[in-house]
Image (cartoon, rainbow, N blue to C red; front, side, top):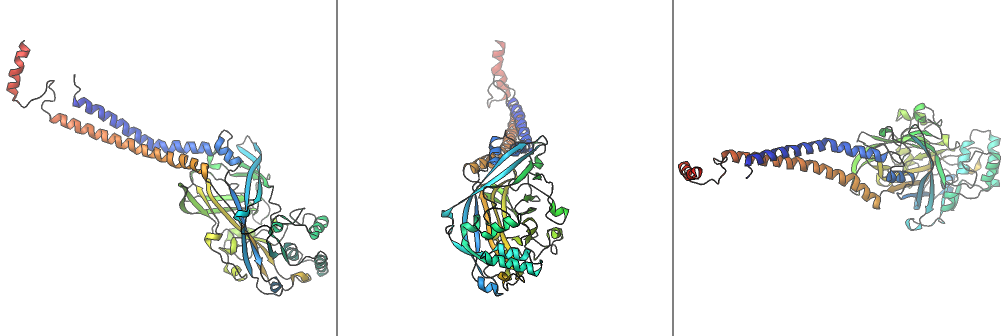
Length: 495
């Protein structure tokens, strides 16, 4: 027996409605399922083999590019003239980072120490570590500022000791020695008679304390109880806050350790993090959307207020004593040495700073700081953190090595730490976080469209069925009149 069009239409209608309902449910349930999977995968949990391994042994290639400000007129500076510098670099170092001493706690936190190691990359560098450059001598000019308020006879004794150890205001040495340390009789003398005055007890170098070292004991939230807290710092070296600065707000340890952030970001989100090297918490702000290898990202940059002084931005008053905006005075956590941090070439700083040194040319592309982050997971895809190390120097009475140096914040070096996700990791990211969610989204609309098309087909079939005068006949319908149909079928009935 043939199935009637009416029954087929009903079946199609039911199937279409169920398909539309399923597609509609996917619209609402799909994102919840995806978000739940993301939350489970970004929490710090050894059971998450891939994400935990990425967190523990960072597989992303990191590089540190170092640029020196080679002093062209050291003698003229001693005579009071404006400094003139030329940028020399980059000298590039591959950077390996890994976590050790990992300990999980019952309150959903985990403690660890992160170690870093640097290796010189000649093929990526402008020259070799044997290249010679001239920079200000921090041991002389820094000590002169630190001793400025001591009695005049003491300052004369300090000056005599500089002469005895043949230390001058400017230092001309190979890049490798300036970076990782050089032997100095003055350093040995200071470490023996003034322990704690210098940041290290071995050779003196700008990055001597960085190589083969750790950034302190971090305790961060695992996110297992609340994914919104994942990676946020609970304490650093056992401290909930530091004591380097003048206000409670400036001493707060906020945000993460600067490697990952909680997931589900929006353009209103910020990237707060604590930096042991800068001795303070910092915060980046949203700039624009973008893409890295097909993965959507948000770009976060440093706000102009990051290194603003207390006059231009009141919350930064706690970081003072301040100079012009664009400088962070880190002397309080650097053995009182007159060291300042800024953006390279005084980018985003008070124009006055740029006018005091010849040879600088700031621009955002080369000297801006940014992090491209995947907003759904809080994982950085492309990072470029650039900072400059400056020395405040001037003539100090009684210390003849300082000559007639005019008061100036002198750039010494700037460095950029960069890294990006590439290769198999990027492909995995793209597949799991772009392709799969897109497929689920397409499936939602495919089911809804298919269901609506089925419902429409059922309606059309039902309409045709109603218009057919033979819809209830079990025999084929012909073009003959109804009477003839009756005459033809009567003998059949009688028989």
